[in-house]
Image (tube, rainbow, N blue to C red):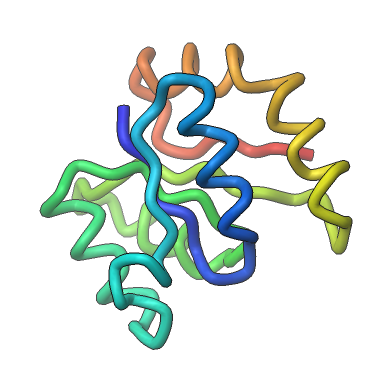
Length: 109
């Protein structure tokens, strides 16, 4: 499973996922930090990434029902890097299970 981390989230999240044995890239690493949501969506779809974002716009794209990538929607509010990574560490097994089960949107609160 491959994860594409959106701009509002730190590169450290991508690194954390890598330490868990997952493939992960941040949009900045791919030169997509200035890309529109639709461009990121299309890239993720073409390259088989799951988008990890705080951006609700990706949910609207999922709800169009035209296929596309799954989305991990981060709803933790503004928090520092440490609490964000701790939250992911706690729920990562559930995230992976939901995505492997075909869920298109996984929400983290």
